[in-house]
Amino acid sequence: MKKTSIKDIARLSGVSVATVSRVINNNGRFSEETRRKVERVIHDTNYEMNYSAKNLRMHRSDTIGILIPDISNFFFAELTKLLEEELFSSGYSVIICNTAHDDVREKAYLKVLASKGIDGLIVISGSTKFELDQTDSTNQIPYVCVDRQPQDQSQTIFISSDHYQGAYLATKTLLQAKSYHPVIAIGTFDTPPMRDRLQGFNQALEEHNVDQTNWGHVFKLSTLEKAESDTKAYLERHPQTDSFFAVNDMVALKLEQVLHRLGKKIPLDIKLIGVDNAPTDEYVTPTLSSVAQDNAALAHQAVKYLLGLVNGTEQPGQEIILPTSLKLRGTTGH
Image 1 (cartoon, rainbow, N blue to C red):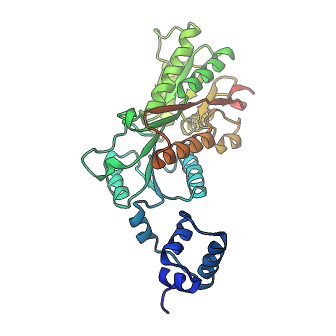
Image 2: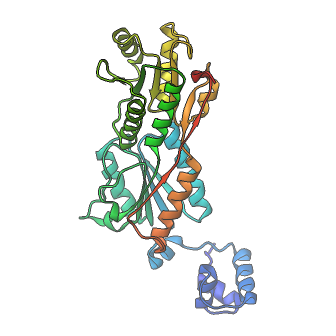
Image 3: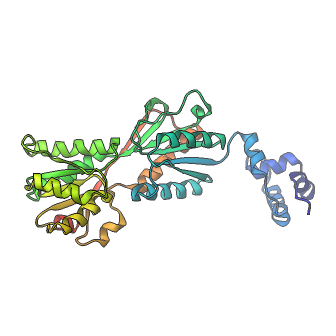
């Protein structure tokens, strides 16, 4: 069966090819009657537009790339889902690339995305500052960084939660609940959000005159698999520990499991707060207190500003910081 062409649509509609093109792309001048006539023929003939040819002509693909460091992490997965929904509703398709915290894989994906002719890029988190290679085809792609510090902020728009404020609020809450020896539990990846959370934690200790000179207030897990032996050894060295602020819920939930095994009563012996407000926080006993990021707002701002860069209505060099909130539950006695 011969495939219907735009020339066929024009002939059957009794208008020019140029008019059909204007109706399909919704630009230029044509009457409402002409629109209905053309759209009726398109519907009756099951006409399918050659999007590759159209995009080549218009120098756009209606496709956005998303770089995500760990698809198994709740925060990253939730944020990516929200981004995809926002972009789809704006008429864009999405290519999602899971970099697994691997710089080599990230660079390889960037080349693939450039070859696909993406219109824009959203870069989520990561341990290093992000920069597009100025020597290849990626340097012309508009992009925004979400929770990922750009190497040159004048080239992009940076969007992030206020990780410092969230950590400060969590630590202050522990101190006000008569936790005299709080500890920050850090995972394996050193990222700007993690460093901001450490600063917020330290600021709260300083304001409450907690002496940090006699013992360490930072507990670094070597791996989640070694969490039990690491925690046991740490508590043997620092038995006065009475609370943990974990830099994400994966670490917090693992700590809660381990502390139960070590015979610690939560929150009586040790209080616990995580970060990310994952759905699983409600399904453990006791339920996990956590710092919540506004994922919907992060996604909305990321899409809004990226499409602004793509369409020329926004300028790079901006920074958008969104507040966090604290969800208190059973691990802090609430």
